[in-house]
Amino acid sequence: MAVAPEGKTPAVDASSLPLKRKMFLVVILCLITLTALIVQTKAFNQLFAYVLSELKKPPADYLPPISVILPCKGLDPGFKDNLKKLLEQDYVKDGKAQFEVIFTVASYDDPAYAEIEAVCKSLQSVHTQLVVAGVNSQRGQKINNQLAALKVISDRTEAIVFVDSDVIARDNMLRYLVAPLSQPGVGATTGYRFYIPFKGDLPSVLRSMWNRVTAWEMASEKYAFAWGGAMAIKREIFNRARVAESWDRAADDDLSLTTSVKRLGLKVRFVPQCLVASHGDGTLEEIVEWTNRQLILTKVYYPELWMRAIQRAILLSFWLIAVLFSLFAFCLSGNQEWLLSLAAGLTLIPVELFFLVKAQGLWKRVLLSNLPNPSTDDERELQAAFDKTLLRSVMAIPLAHLVLPWMTLYSVLTNRIKWRGVLYELKSPTETVVV
Image (cartoon, rainbow, N blue to C red; front, side, top):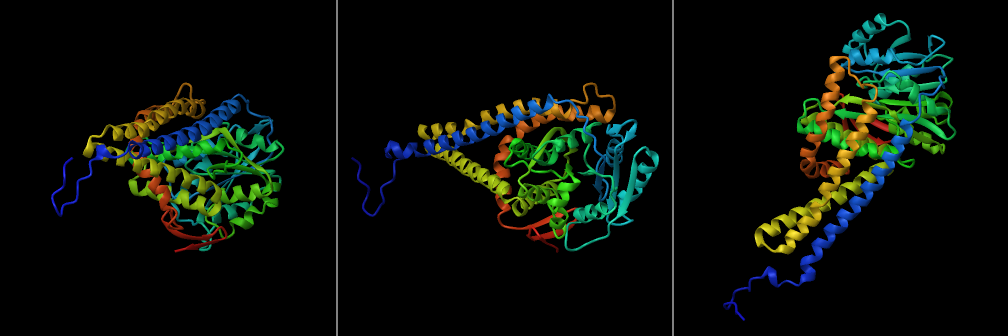
């Protein structure tokens, strides 16, 4: 047995450590991977079964008079075309449109004002209004626009639909979105967005991936939430849930509506046919700002769903740290146990690839089902960009694990968001301050 020279500390031989201590990280990584596998499998299978079941349902004949409210600020990509698609909706009974569209902006000098006027003049088969809401420093501008529009809706309106200007709507979106409101126990219905990164840069791909994972919650009766880009609610339930009151000093519309409806014991129902394509391109700064905003709004207005995201981020953070530690330990020592630990952790990657490929087919079926034979350049570009998202997402998986958990955990530290150039401090669900 070798004896260390006097005054020297004996070197630790990694190979002499007890096997149980060497295998500890292997067990931890296996448990984390198994947990992630179970959670993802359960959520995905629930979503898959729900979406396939809903897709079998034809458009309903339930066509109550509705008011569609569209708050605008600035010009989103495809702004004019998106407005035209909304005004040309197949929501017609006896040859007459059963909906009106109320556009609303903060001021006359908003670039959207002139564009809206031009579109309304060119398409007059649907009754439209354009409301200038002004500015209120105690609530979000989008909500201020929506509240102004609510004051002028038709007396015959039975349900209210809220949409965003970046939504690329299929021609029967309103018909599908409103139909489930006739079912007992349904308080609100919702579509969801699918960000398509047309340019394919990494920040845009990461947003698309982050958004896809969030969509998995929409099939859950417990966690499903309304999305402000396409959501509908009966007028009577809107009033009974006191949504307008909850919006009075709020920064968020959809999650606030969600919690108000669920307090009545009613459900938010996801309508897969109202999954809509959104232009997902953006700079790194814009996408970090967007992700931060989504998380903090969820933290303030729907803390149960936010905690679910935090738990997932903590789990994946531990997984990442353990995998990186195993990699560095193997490179430094060459011990096979560290290689085994690394392999145990990396088994999560092929599982995620499997779900990514399977989900791609599902989302394509839902999102592009009304474009079997794309007829315009925009439609062909949309389908081509969607087809490219799979390869880009596969390549971005390592970066997603390095970045997304920490972006999620950052929301623990702040309640400030930036929205369309305005900085807000969310002090509570009923107190918002423009900074």
